[in-house]
Amino acid sequence: MSNLKVIEKAYEAAGQRYAELGVDTGKAIERLSGTAISLHCWQGDDVGGFETSEGLSGGGLVATGGYPGRARSACELRADIEKAMSLIPGKQRLNLHAMYAETAGKIERNELTAEHFAAWIDWAKANGLGMDFNGTFFSHPKADSGFTLASADEGVRRFWVEHGIACRKIGAAMGKELGTACVTNLWIPDGYKDIPVDRKGPRQRLRQSLDEIFAESIDRSYLLDAVESKLFGIGSESYVVGSHEFYLGYAVRNNILLCLDTGHFHPTEVVSDKITSVMEFLDRILLHVSRGVRWDSDHVVILSDELRAIAEEIVRGDYLERVHIGLDFSMPALTVWRRG
Image (cartoon, rainbow, N blue to C red; front, side, top):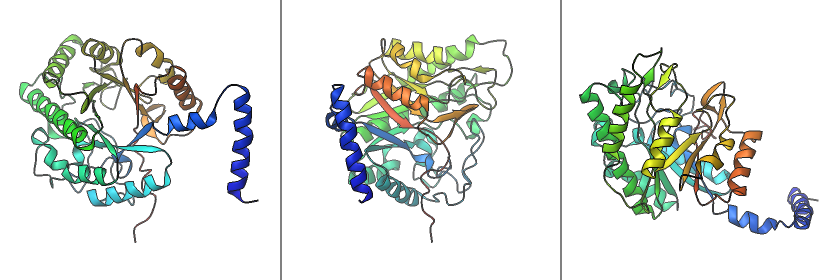
């Protein structure tokens, strides 16, 4: 008996057992077929981006961008993504970062427009994909202080506010062109390595910056705004401005998406336990599904107990249409074939 026949026979047997419990496996699979997973672009180049040929590092980022076989250009990355998607079942989207603009490093981040992502949009349209988007608030001279939107330097803060505004316009253009709302997420690395005297001031500045970025109302059929917290990072071990409590309050008050990254909480916290709580107060949320080990979201997703629990909470809570699922880890899982 062929492997396919063995699988089909096993599925039929399982389907019968589920049917005895009142579960129609065919309908379940049909429903899940409409649930898209957004693949993060930097899984193909280890968070290199295309602003420089050396890749990015510093300013809130630790990844090297030097993994052997990583994509060296946007064309190579798109080819790698196509190859990976051909091997991955289910419905997919692409999650793109601002640093993947095709500008040859000649355009500053606060001057980016949808034109600098035209090739990505055309590629997504040709492949029938939706796109999601992220501002790049790290690995830049204006992030070297460890502060961006919460910076006490008005010139630095203004630069990053302009970048955030530009990213929303780019995301809206992607959503409009592709006919599916673009989830545009905002994460910043702002914080202190040691205990600060003033915890209040940076959070007041961050709130002011966010209010300026989100001031323009954009059709939610084109753009869905999201904000993402983090427990700590390299250089911000003691204090992070954009904490979970800060962004939860901001998202609830302003009716935008809260991003829950599975690698951005204390190791004993689990996102699966947070979903039903935040969904009582928010219309939608964004998940960044990764596998934090000791800290952060570096590790390739496996079928862990927590991943299963997250899926169960989404389905049991009837949240499939209200939860946007993206992958976010920096090991280059998309480099699935070696170039000749």
